[in-house]
Length: 331
Ligand code: A2P
Image (cartoon, helix red, strand yellow):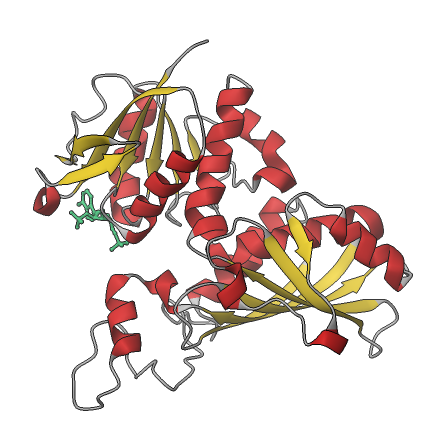
């Protein structure tokens, strides 16, 4: 069996370290890894599957030695510059930044939902936004069975999605100490502000959810709106998703449709106070769905509460699952 060479770009970051963790959990036929970060980290050491690797500075020549695949999570500017260089050298890049996501010739992929889109890749495959990824599993399940007509997202997003400095802000309970990441305290607070504001009044995060949903579900005109909110939770995003469906449904059938979809776990026993929660989702790759109830304000509508680990399924695990399928299918 062929053994593959894999590069990890941004290996020292929050998601980069999760790439390493998730790769260690899987037994993929990878013969060698190379770890890249900025000049700042060059020479530092990271361990992967018991082997110590020296982190190398990313340069224009980093891909000269020929990699089969590269996992990128070093921000949009790094992806913009270096992903095309890697692709030109014959490497398939799985990119966690938002830079290429809406490019027509770049597949945007959640493996359980639209893996076949990777067949149109030109060397770069984009990993969707964390809050989009977890919503795609239940929405794809419902779309295939009932057709979705309109979606309203309200998110409750964890601080880890904003990086290490943001997590320091969450621990900062002293109002006199300066913040590192957010414009306001996140401790004891909620910020209806994720990524920057656009002229239309939405944030970039909200528009990512709207545009990426349409692309992944192949519904370019789907009616979708979103309000994204940062909450003082360290890890795992929660989302309220209101969905209007084309067809009528029986509640039991709808719940079974969700239950039978790969990697969805239903947690929905209100009588026992059981529903999805961030503290239970953290460390897992499944998407947890609960509080499933009919929306009586429309003809055929349902409310869902959807929780997943934003660093794992929302970033590193989704990328590694794409890599795993590429290897399995020898793409
Ligand atoms: P470094 O640790 O050397 O700064 P996070 O999103 O958690 O902040 O992580 C960002 C990742 O991207 C880190 O691994 C960081 O490396 C890496 N990175 C940032 N800028 C560059 C760059 N110009 N070239 C390569 N890697 C970079």
